Image (tube, rainbow, N blue to C red; front, side, top):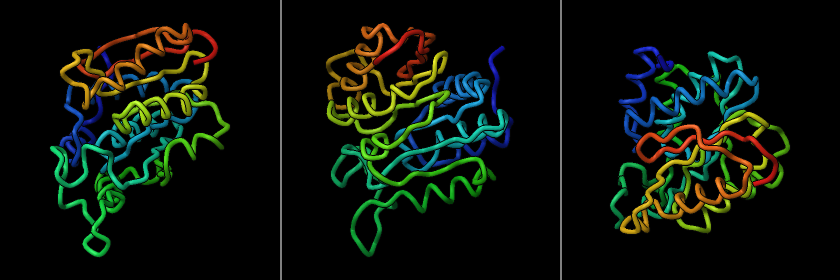
Length: 216
C-alpha cells in the first residue's frame, strides 16, 4: 500500500490555497517518500502558496532531508489579472502586483513544517545556473509556456541523481489544452526520448519518471 500523509498533514494540504487535486497530491507524496530514501534534498519548481510544498516537506521530515522550493512569487502567466486562475487576494495592495510569498509562509507555519523547507525566491533558470548539488527528486510545476517549462527542465533535470525521480505536473496530451498543459507534455516527451528517464507512473496529469541513464 503506498504511503500516505498523516491526517493533520493531509488536512493542511486540502486547506491550502492551490490547484493540485488530492489524487495527484497523494502520488506526489508517495514519490517524495521513495525519493527521500536516497538521503538527498527534494526540490520543487513552482511554489505558489505552498499546497504541494506541504507534502514534500512532510516526506522530507520523515526522511531527514530538506525540501527546497523555488519560485519568484509573482505568479505564472495564467495567474495574472484577467486570467482564469487569478486570485485577487494574492495581489500586494501597495505594489499592485502578485506576491504569493506571504501566503506561502502562512501555509507552512500552519502546517508546522517551516523547519523542513528552504524557500528560494527568484527565477528558476537563474537559481538552477548556480545550483551544484544532486537531488533525490525534482518536481516541475512552474510556468506553462514552452520557454518556462523547457527552462525548468534544462535547468533542474541534470541535478536529478541516479535513481532519483523527476516529476512533471499538468501533462495534458490533448492539443485542446495548449495553454494549460501542452508545454509540460512536450517536456515529458523530451525526458522520455532522452533515454535518461524511464516512466514510473502516471496519475491524472502527474508523471513520475526515474533517472536510469545520463544526460537530459
